[in-house]
Length: 128
Image 1 (tube, rainbow, N blue to C red):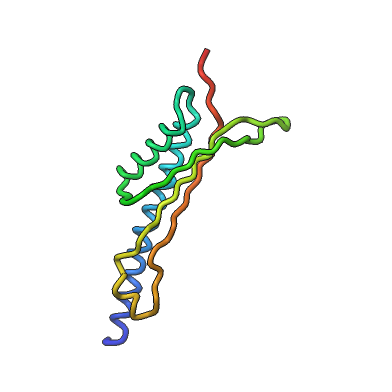
Image 2: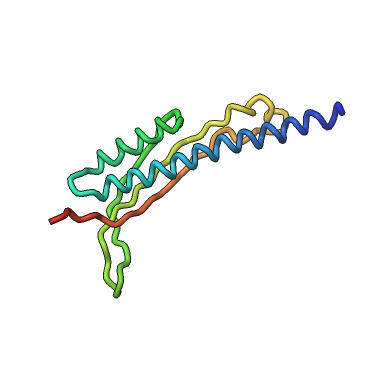
């Protein structure tokens, strides 16, 4: 019991920590989709899309710096043509602090992971 319990707790706490990281990744993925949607609407700028990404991430519980980059792209269309669109890339550095002291017993540990999410959408045209 003295040998197995600490290892079992480490595994359980690692699963919980991975769950927190995955939750942040899902929020960043949704934030990228929201930013791409705003970037493709007529009358909105790249700055509006970045503001939407940062607002969505903050409301989703992501703490720290969230970087967003909006890039114009050409998407393949039907019949060999292309459609103009926007790609939003969101990055966030997730710092591991849940298992920080315990991972020192097993080596250097991970420390931090850069989470990256992308979303691409076709430009919307204004209604006549």
